[in-house]
Length: 122
Ligand SMILES: [Zn+2]
Image (cartoon, rainbow, N blue to C red; front, side, top):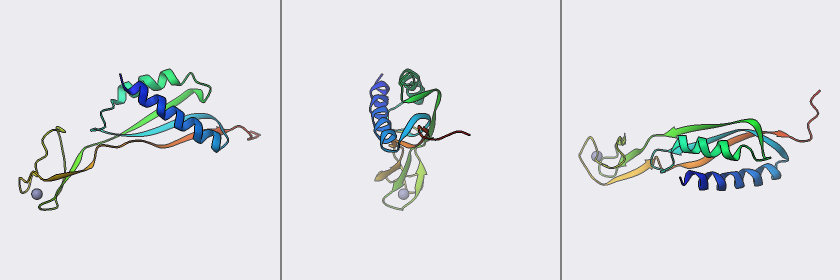
């Protein structure tokens, strides 16, 4: 399950960013995951559950995943269209095969929320 490794690098990034922003505990992370990124949302959730035990996260921290569908753009006629099976890239208009992938390969942390360790909650 390579999602475990992906999550490990994301946790590293989050940890660095949290330190930089004086955030003590992270309670929410949002990822954008393209259908072509080869990362499975379910597996990412499982991996997150493992890493959630880390001091960096609150025990009730949540991982939100936004899935992006694969979209292609035909270089012949300019039409943008959803690619349903990730394998066959054919323009539905002109049947052209010169298709550029414009979304679906994303895999990144959109944003995260955390708690500032220095905040007085009164
Ligand atoms: Zn076309």
